[in-house]
Length: 439
Image 1 (cartoon, rainbow, N blue to C red):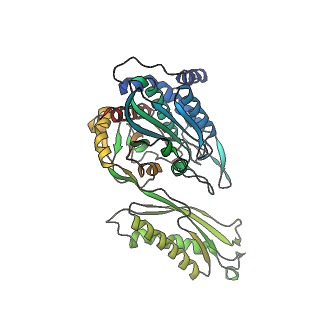
Image 2: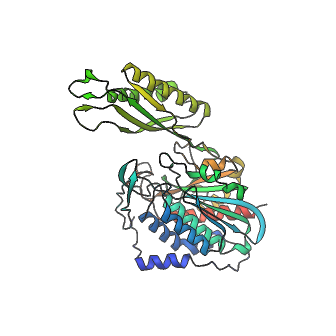
Image 3: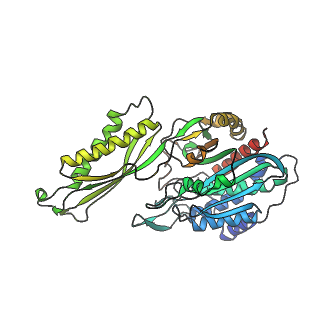
């Protein structure tokens, strides 16, 4: 699919016009399709702008300034910035009595060098774990932010006809804060966003490569896995590469730890209960071809759906790392997990049943997909632990491509069919209007 190019002048016009104060629509009942159409061009413009200027977690300064300026221009109440470093919230108060709803979008990008060839592809770089890396919206958070900006504008345009109140949450660091920092949903909650505004429900979306454009996906109950990060430092004794017997080789010990850890999933977990994943994501050690180093660092992720299995994996990975290293004469510093992880993302069953007709009204019954358990993780789970939550997927892969082989979220070639922006906007508007309008 080819993207039409937006000229700099047209893009500026779209964004400037969209940020102008909203005018109340003189309609008896707001219509999601009409409202979505009114912001469609602006959403596309925002998304392309954000895609070209991505920022890593806790560093979303340009993004949060754009969002905050837009929310203030709409005349929303209680616009707050600097929450959990760069988060933004605002409240829309409808003209009629009704429930309270929170809508959340994440803003952070990933340390990925883009290879899409798009005219608005990212050329940004940043420092990550001491290295210069490319930065890309390889997970679609640019789309999430643009969609929620459009939803805020659309709902603000009919605020007099709108029942209830809406809290808009633009969250940093969903992918996890930088090492040594706090951030994300948990930090926003610790800083009181649900104390200042206690919603009756919270909703969010995610564009997803395993669904085709035009499809929406959801699952009642558990949807996405708990996610925990680990760090294992294998400590040996440095020596010349020609005399390995003169030291303790942490590279060989680390290799054995990685191989032995695979048995946790393949031989030690009862996968007939729930799925489990243990993945190593990086190995760092050594600097020269003929020097056996002092230590090797291993980092990775654990994904589970059952709390007992989650704790069991932690213990087994520590035991394997400790004992395998000892067999090599090495020691380990095993931080498993190395920080608070994300709980399971679970959709409230009653809220899911109530909202499914809204999804079907937008996409059609045949295009609403019942999703299997997903080993990906989301810190939206923190919000849904405190109030009933509903999280759904929006298909991102063009209809002429096979989602099974299309570049996935987090790939440097991740590609978003822009029709997902319109569908996501319509879906979020319809869910919001239906929730607020139902007794």
